[in-house]
Image 1 (tube, rainbow, N blue to C red):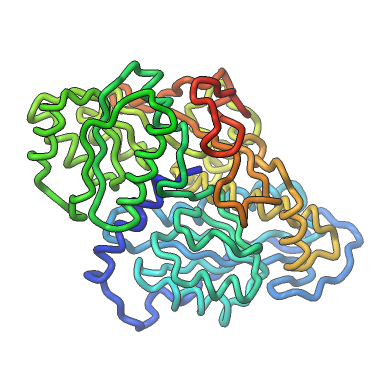
Image 2: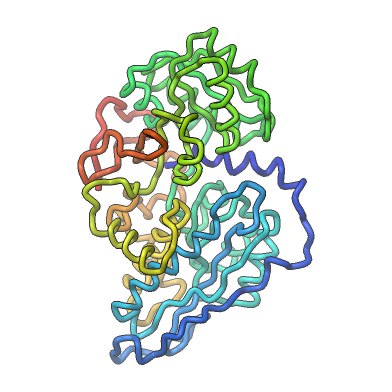
Length: 436
């Protein structure tokens, strides 16, 4: 469940029109893997021939799309690193069915050219699967759905909901029909009673605010005393909003904004002496937090992946850290999401068997009712995920910001996720359980 991050992604669409929409195809060319591995490096076995796109006797080839070029400074390119690191681990263990996994195409959609880029992936690369998808816009979703290509990515857009061949590592539900205990639980744990929430003046961001309202109506651990969805994307003056929150004695602040927006807010809060902690839905960015440490002391960050600060690290998390390090890759949230995407893909391949097909991988994954990537994410029931908007489970990992660093909050040792079970709207916010 990461519905509040959808608002951030959608709000960025406001600036998309200001970015280049040229169809010159700058981001539409794939860069091909130059790994020197050969079939001899893959532990052998007598495996059947497979007549599928992107599959050769020695390789299973996939392509990915990321907004490498973007106006937000997002580290989206590191999603390729997460997939590459996971593939390196699997290939070192012998690959899959005598074949190595290859990330053959790495496409940059230049932030606004997702549909054209996805067309290039389908028509030029013709890969067995598409991963990762690490983009703000997913206008090429219908093309991948129609082609029935197994597709894996960070599902921060509602486009991911529905197609049975789409496997995001998150579930999105925003709006008044989606009351979640995640934010009310923060208020309860911190003992805060007066909440302020800020959102942008676009529909998806406003829907995030609607979801927050519904959450506190269902789980009244605090009272929303100030809320606005009138902020424009890129707003540089939030003085009036902060003054209103100070006047209302707000003691906890939540946002439906991107990191730049929350930084503007945090600076104004410091200026006016409003010391309420901020809850951030998409700020698990070590570089950003270290650079801006003074503005986010004691902030709470919600993340859907197991934070690398989890102690002790369980095997899947340690594998991620180890194999990212072996390749010299930086640990980022985008990379971890993509690692989970790769694990989902490989899980489907193994379940489909040596005579695997695209359809076989999709069908195998959609039979899994408790998939969690070895503890890297909260469990997903793929038998229901595609079609049930009110998904009956909520899991989240919480970290606190202390002196510019993230520290695990509220989870049990080695078990970072706080989860609730039951149909949405009936979960008991005061009764979560740790899950890993």
